Length: 510
Image (cartoon, rainbow, N blue to C red; front, side, top):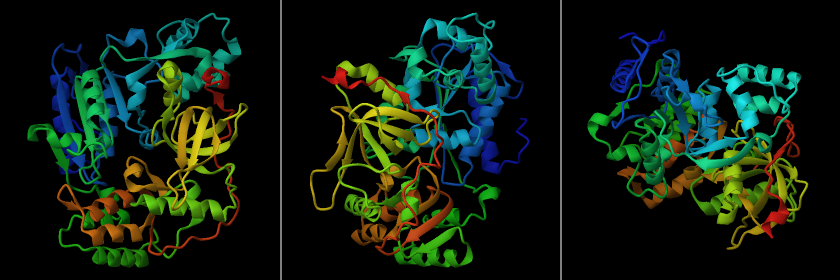
């Protein structure tokens, strides 16, 4: 069959062929560009797995391009046209905002699983504008927006293909045009899921209900979800439903970080051997650094990755101490991690609003300052398409040797946060940063304890996940020391946009 213009490795070409065969059975022929109506009652499931650098993301991107060229519509989760329901559709998903943003930076229109499970309900007046932006109607005559604002919305949509972003360019907030959220009732069509190693059984079941044609992309060497003792969801698939990519794509072949990651597959490799390998790489290539201390300046945007919770808390305490952060308040620029939502059932719409804006468990956030109402915070959600929000917040600062966290800043209920200067390697899955600091003394403890997970020494799985979070540079920190900051915390590196309130008013929580 005809492959994309780039040169695939042998196993990538085989995987591409197997996926196109699956899609042809579903009525989408990528060879001839033929798209037939979906068949009722049939389902197809396949997993493409491989370690870092094996070309999974490249393959996903090329399959997306081929499907789009064939005329398959991409469902983004921000708006779904009623007129699309008789067309073939594709949704590209990731478990977290950060993982979805990694794909978006590579030109793949990914969204989160949550945004597909729950779809927005648009005000009818703005629904007309959305249909026009999608090319499904004439330019509307509306009192909702001026002609000039409509022009701005149209120009924005041509560049970003996002209805909410287009309406924001016209001067609107999400609460102006979205009246609520509802659980998806009708199935979609084709689903691609990246970082599938992070899926738990409940998410997997939800996805199988929504997508009759489901393709998983995952890394079998990562850590299984904490709440999935049985392993990763693709482990239970039949051999005919799985294909593993083995060869590192040639453009990644000289990457020292990936060299280290793949060296961990050697069953004879001991921790001391691996550290010598890291030290040797650091002498040969400046993309690997043998660190004598934790670089505090990096912690504000790229957390230190640790294994033990106690280590995480100590590093956070040290980070705040060197920045002279007062116990009673947060400094603008401090990193946070969303730890969930504390909202009762009667505030279900508020919960969906928060989650839709990216405040889901595990989301990385930067504190910008207090909001207008007591207990509210202005926040920048890393990786979200519309990153700056204002929301009722409960911030918990954990302290060494103390069971209960200190709460310097809190609403009665809302989004809860832990400090994000350091995170566990488990929570870092699905995320990537340009530079990553790995706290090696923690991995040494895991190696010394001799713990095993899924037949593999735990320290190797931890090391593999940790170092493959680094896109450009890896710092292997070998001593329990912290550098001094070169300056105060800042927020100038974050795009300055007026935060859109989520209408979580304090009086509603009485």
